[in-house]
Image (cartoon, rainbow, N blue to C red; front, side, top):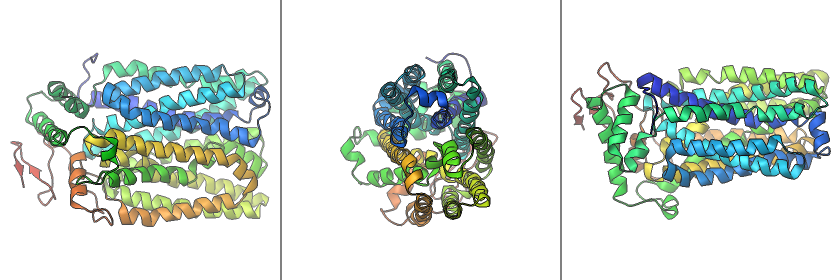
Amino acid sequence: MVRGNLTGGKARGGIAAICGVAFLLFGYDQGVLGAVIGLDSFRREFNDPNPTLEGIIAAIYDIGCFLGALLAFVTADYFGRKGSVMWGTWIMVVGTILQTSSTESVQMILSRVVTGIGNGMNTVNVPIWQSESFKSHNRGAMLIIQSALIALGHPLSTFMGLASRQAEPSSFGWRWPIAFQGVFMLLILLGLPFLPESPRWLVHKGRVEEATEVFARLGGRDVNDPATILERDEIVQSVEEEKKLGEATWGEVFTEGPNRNISRVLLGAGPYMMNQWSGINSLAYFLPITFERNLGMTTELSLILAGVLGIQYFFISWLPYFFIEKVGRRKMLMGSAAACSFCMVMIAIMRKVDTVPARWVFVAFTFVFFDVFSLGILPVSWMYASEIMPLRTRNKGVALGVGSHWLSNFVVVFVTPDAIADLEHWLYVIWAVLNASFVPITWLWYPETARRSLEDMDEVFRNERFGLTKTRSPGTRTKEGGDGIIRRDPEADLYQVDTKGSPHS
């Protein structure tokens, strides 16, 4: 049941807003521990944890996220995309209460697992809900906004930690920044009842009449409008074809077959892993600590620099909104990875030189690294898997992709405190090499998804064998005309639709 009467842009804007808050919460959660772990009140509460325990407290959250990502494929099928986001958020509420009230390391570790489970569920279902509710020509732009909000979460948590530092030596100094994320959870839970479920999921469950109403609501049209009927019939046909083969099993997900399922799982997991193995969270989770322990800065200056970096990161991450559909995912991913590699080379050199000027150059290239990361790897990693998975296996496929993200995140965050101390500049050399490897990998194997519908990508994978991709340019989906009909270029690879809604081969 949906409350209210939001339609058209208001309905789409509502979905985008709630998804945005969920991603803002995700970014805040990633940065908040790094903002408080260096505070005297936190270290005193948990008996001055060593680097290994710091790594466990930070990284165990990602194990929870991994478990939540796997759980999401069950909840998404049973409760729907929107319903799963609601359950994921309630689980995060419980975890946040337990974290805020922690008095020993064991409670903090367990509570971060609980919070992670809820967030893992949301990071699977939010992109799917959004990708299934928006058309191909604006789906990427909406996900750019979500990526920017992830970036905003980092400085928000950092400045929250800086402000609450004034409460030292009271434990309020570290408890309040953790408790504050409950504000985002409240906004999500209040907004969900007014928004529609994914129309594709409704069709998949045989609730075609409800799906038609949702298509009409999202398009701001009547249920009998030709554009609404065309949109619904396209999805119904796709779902019917998939249902003829029965429900997807895990065995099918890991079988190639005519739909190239295992290829899509591997390709979908790739950008998620690139996100983590770029080294972004080796810096992001422990940015104040990196500045403090590597560069000898004060705690206050480290927090200020980390916060300013995060604000710049947020503003730069909006730029792909204006060109990601035109330029495409591939070029942005390759350009971003190449630039990240260069930044890590410079950071490694400055860490090795370790003079006062070199330390400030280290800071400067850290700023640049976050900027170029936000221009490609960040947005593409969160949209690619949901854009290439077929409907029958989308829940399981995206869950596996997000799961690979969280497992990689766990490894990176767990080893970082010790690596900062033991590997020194070689840590950044490793990140540089990994970033460089992403360029040929993307060029050789990743088909372009920009301006292609979810059904278009089914056609791409049916026509290409596993191996080198030939789909290297954006597709030909265009924006709606004044009559609301989506059209293709006359020379498009699939079909064109006229004002009467009749397909032409």
